[in-house]
Every structure is written in C-alpha cells, then in structure tokens.
Image (cartoon, rainbow, N blue to C red):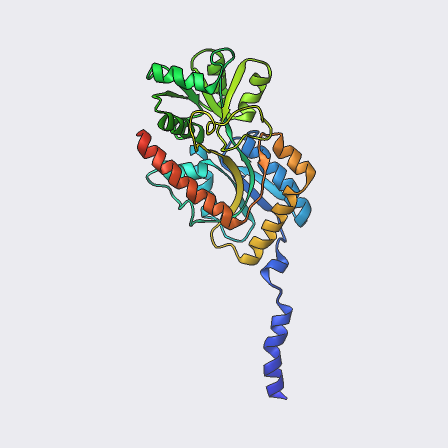
Length: 319
C-alpha cells in the first residue's frame, strides 16, 4: 500500500501541474518600440497589439522607449524576462545598429528570440518635379558633377542614409549626404531646394508625389513594388542587383520557451491573415508579410553583413 502511494504521487502531481504554455497568457502583455508616439513603429505596434489581444484574451499595452535609433528600447528588452509578456517591435535599423555601433549593450542576434516579420517595405528615390526625367538622367548628372548632387536623409546611420551610400558605391557617384531629424524634415528640405533628392519610405514621399511636387524616380526593392508598378527599380536601371527592403518585426528577449514562442507566433500569423490588419499595414506603405523566427533571424544576420560592408566601403564613421 505504501509502495503504491509512493509510485502514484509523482504521477498525480504531474497531472495536476499544467505546462507554462497552458497558462500563458494570464495577464497583460506589452509591445515595446524605440520610436516616438504616432510614428510608423507606434502605429504598427498598436495594430498588432489589438489583434494579439483579441486572439489571446489579455490586454497588450504599447510602450514607447525612444532613443538612439531604437537601441535604447532594444537594450531594455534584451534585459527583460523571457516569459512572453514583453515583446519588441523591431525595425530594419536593428540590423543597421549592429553594423554601425562599435559597442552595444546587447547582442543584436543572440540576445533576442525572433518571432516573425510583420511588414516589409522598400524606399523610393524622389527629386523635385521636372528636375530629372529618369533615375538614369540623375545618375548621369551626378557622374558629370562629382559632389554636386546632395541627398537628404533621416539621420547619419539610418537605413535611408546607408541605402544612399550603397547607391553611390554601386554607381560610382560621389553624393553629398545631409542628415535631417527624420524623413519629414528631409522631405521639406527637398521641397525648399536644400537637397537634390531624398531616399525614404513611401509614407514620407507619397503625399508630395501625388500632388505633383516630387517625381519618384526609382524604388530600392529588387523587383517593382506592387503599390507602384510604374516606378522602375534601381536594379533594372542604374545599379544591377540592387535590392534593399526594410521591415518591421516582433521579437522577445532570448530564451523564450518554445511552447510560448509557438503561441505568440501563431497569434501573429493569425493577425496578419486578417483583412483589416492587412489593410492597416498596407496603408503605411508596407507589404504585410509574416515569417518564421528562423527566417527573420537569417534576414537580420544577412543585413548586418551587408551594412557592415557598406559602412566600411563608404568610410562611414562607426560610433
């Protein structure tokens, strides 16, 4: 009788103790991002927070921790518990920072569990209306006048800046780069004639392009973008092989249990399948696209390698 009790007791306890995944989530979660309230990262975070909350039945709060191009938020999230209750809305700058900074308070790959991409988007090359009739004409003018063409962008070390540096490297053009406090300021500078072109997301350029103030000369994606099928790619015109896509994604601190990662990944995938979510993300100029965690990690590692090479070749000073 005693032997039977001793054998049965562990089995009883095992049956009575549910797995962590069966209990998750049982309280509010949050999505942290590294940018200002009202910007694209904030909007995407709120779109995903609402959908994940509706699916998992617990609140999802959006928390902004801006600073240093998102690295403040990444450093914070990397130090949080890997329990699924803290996620981060990562952007393409996550890979740029790994290439640009000599030292970060976190490892851009190993300190995170990557869940899924949320959206992918290219940049567009825009000039004042009537200045150049094509991207080929712009590059020809730039080659004829080294240092005479000025690119405005949203800050030194931004993905937009490095995309311009890559364009210069692949075409042999010596652009002058002028940083501004964000894409809107660079767009204003282009309107005012302070710069000759800008490279930025469709959300920054679209309004002035639709109004006939800007001409959109090229897109940075390897193939034409579905929302702008008449805009040629840099790859098919002046820079064969050129392919720059930025992205938003969701991740957590490293060490997330596999069963919790599966719950969150499934919820994200379900959210991205919803027409309302797709429409909201598309309105921001992005293609709502999910991935596996492994695919996202491979994308980040690949982009870290590309931007490391660009920074070295272009002589961009590391921080």
